[in-house]
Amino acid sequence: MKHLDEYVEEAKRKGGYKELKKLYDEIMSGKLKIRDPNPPRDFLEYLMRPDYSLWAWTTITLLILTLFTVFFSETIPILIYFRYVFGSIIVLFLPGYVTIEALYPRENELSPLERLALSIGLSLALVPLIGLILNYTPWGIRLEPIMTALTIYITTITFLGLYRKYKDILQHSL
Image (cartoon, rainbow, N blue to C red; front, side, top):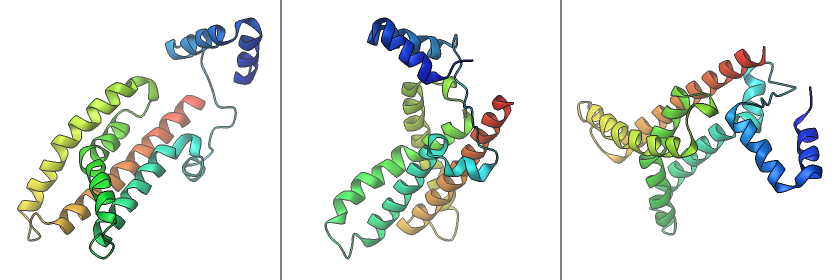
């Protein structure tokens, strides 16, 4: 069994970028399988390895930055522009993105464009649904309850997606 770097070096020697493209196509079509020689042994190790969990840490970081800009934009006026950008991401993209990551844990199940389109479409469906549910609670539809509900939803589904991806990696590494 060859390592990926051996395949890449061989492809470089044979024909450069054309051979690398051919190698990439074989990997994407499933003719050539890439397997991690040292898969994570437990969920904590999976969380700490950026090659597996970078998407989740990026999501949590965006969530924290959004919360910071939303709640401190009144005292630091320059943050209002960041609030618009991060607020748009957290409302229009992240709820659907983490849901898609949890529903489809394997990378090859959906193309990146499909993931993007489904993330935006699902966010446009989920956020109003969360707002509708909040409307029937004592808190109503205000900034703090919406931010709290979105934060809880995104964090919960992110960890659910992480766990499903970990189980999938565990299942395929055996």
